Length: 153
Length: 153
Image (cartoon, rainbow over all chains, first blue to last red; front, side, top):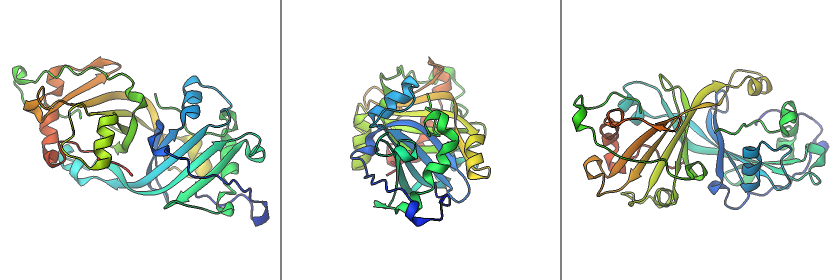
């Protein structure tokens, strides 16, 4: 989430080795959100079939193989829409910012709650140090298996 | 879009007869948006296979059979997320508000640009008068076959 790493010790950063999952842009929608501040984005959270099934069944923890994708785009006012509404009220997706993934593998990622984390900027993975804070920030939602997003019905 | 009908004459309201398409919640994502003002929502725009293909190929007009779904949820601050970020910045999806559809059938809906419009509140369709302004509001984007939403890459 672009927060500071939880550890200053570079050597302690877990190596997640998560690749971009094929076809993730076709996955089904979990929910959407808006982040202000430095992020200033509109985001969609998508899930592969295993993740979607678990969300819909309210099943925790997520089974191995579940993958959650967070896509984000710049938060841009739409003058075109605002003209129709007659006021400033519409914000739409601009350029993509980055894509993040959480991959459930309870054995491989046991030291980080069973989830591997990844972020890709223009298709390039960020390094392990940049990901070293992911797990710590997700700990507050440990009761939901470290997943912030709730399914939007 | 919850705007005033373009016509005061109830008899002139087109009857669209659009039903809720089966499985629309599983459709692929076109884009997301945020509307302030009275709507105050976060929204996701999904498309059936015909619509998604046309969006990705930049093909206009949309072929018959294309359906675009607009889901919307209340725009709700997330105190849970804000605690992690350390400031007020996160907005997530609350309760669903309503669902809208645009269905392309160039013959059946010839008088409204080839699109039929529908809105369902808690699964119940709104009446023809409530939909009579849809077409007029979409005319400004006639050059994009009356579709406001642009595909988010």
